[in-house]
Length: 373
Ligand code: BGC
Image (cartoon, rainbow, N blue to C red):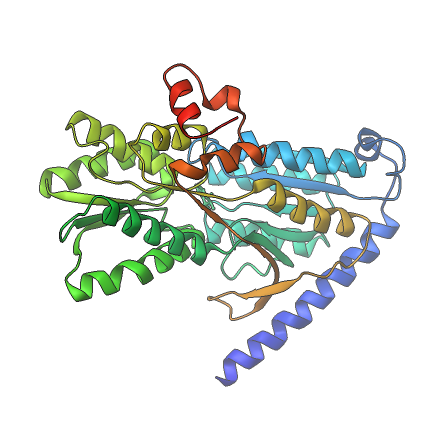
């Protein structure tokens, strides 16, 4: 207990110091170098924001949504920025961070590949007076000054409830559930699982559902997810519901189910409202996905980054507890939304995917049926 309080105070002191140091830095080192010139007029006194995305394979979102919305926000604010993707390579992640710092980044926003390497990057940044933001994934023990994400436990709760709804619709009797979890190195995967297990465990305990295979997919690797699910289904051919933690993992399971003529019969969940996930829903092969309005997440994070780049000390609306350090990290957490066949249209109406990319070929009729304008 005592230790907890001490480390919390230490973290708070560090936080204050870190932000103050950054503010000073931003004000005195804002030279109109290459960075500022790429930002255009009005950015002379602002710093530069470096963003490191994790990969482009574990989910389509990073390159199709996050990059786009972050870029738009930085451009609109006239703040210099550099967005790079580590392509799943932890060494590369650190190299990119070092280069960004050398090239004058005053704010570093990261989506870590794991907490260990994320922490190394954050430590280095902080030691150079660079302000830090954890974007989407919290770096455990990392001590980032801010965290911007969705309520990830709620994402999991929506997935659990979604699977229950789809199984109820199918009048499934004592279904055997398989769980295909996200990467064990991603704190979000832990939160998603807490959320859906909170819904499923009472069902297992009461005997309504039967707990089947339950496995994590290293690095959210979609190909590996297919192999894992294939083994699950071989060992337990009566799997009747699949809690897949995102659309990529869900699609891997659906591909295996298709080979066994089980697609559409066994509900599968997802997350990210990717074009593929939404098409799987329209086809009846996927039960639901969770839509996270990435524009809102990118806007919240870029607003913080822009303020920090200008040497300000922005306030965050809330905080989350870092379960490793015990520190409270100032945070912005947004609300996720469950998507089923009937409200796929909401995702289109929100501008996250276009009708053109979604309603191709055979999906055109399904789109009409789902009321997509
Ligand atoms: C994100 C998800 C994403 C997954 C794989 C998670 O940390 O919150 O949106 O699908 O990583 O990239």
